[in-house]
Length: 349
Image 1 (tube, one colour):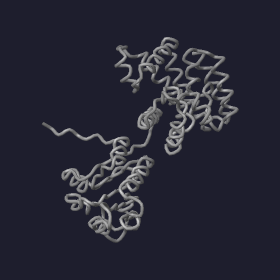
Image 2 (cartoon, rainbow, N blue to C red):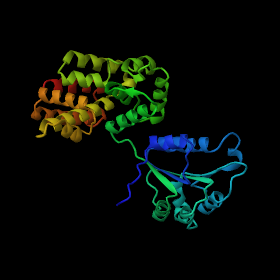
Image 3 (tube, rainbow, N blue to C red):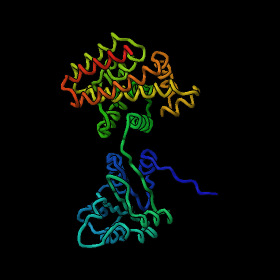
Image 4 (cartoon, rainbow, N blue to C red):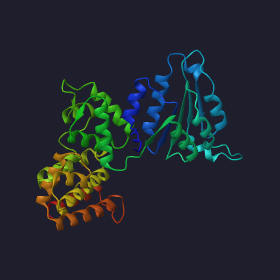
């Protein structure tokens, strides 16, 4: 029987380290630096206590470090403590060192038989670590773990990150609240999770993060946001839609048009997928739209009843054109005027 592959997530790794369970080697890699920075600091905080970092923490940087020196430090026993932490930051710069062949492949020999009292952390930002011999030796010896931190490439990814973090801090959040935070804060995960940590301290007995709580403590309107604009267009409520756009124009810092247009493109693309699907079962619609929410699928279905497939194709074309024009391609018109034009076109499609 094939061995089941271990699933490593930020939440699972954070819980493991917080509980005081450490692997001999950690490879933290990927394009999203937030998770890498958080995990490396958590490992240091949990593996070393009080004054122990003064004697048992070695930090190397890829632009100046030699891998041989990293290995030498990893092979040293801790001083008056149960563990030593050896950290190589910016490991992606190792291969750029001129004049010698010192590279991460050398770690394969250490990975085959690491020192049990050492926690070695390799931080590789901007992509995946390319040293196949090192990774294979580590996996073969089961001496470490690889955590990949992919860049959030879509609104769906961002909302999944919000939902996952909220669950990890023992709270719950509804779709509207997720969208409010995603629209206002964007992919700045450091700020996003900082705001969620603040909200966690303010939730009631039900431990639920609500639009009202966000409005009071983060400064985002629960009535004038992209989620409400989507709702207005879904139901063809012109008055509400134009009122929201006017609010956006008066508060441009928290309501950039580029974000709104991106949201509209994602929404109407999903509505078209639902409208064109022959299989209207909830499972199929959730799969093709990439959502785990039946409630969300119901919203797409309602919009599909209010807009024909031909209209949806035309709307998506107009959204693309608006996106280009708001970025100065073929137009110098005020971006909120362009958004109003787009809203008019959608409502009359």
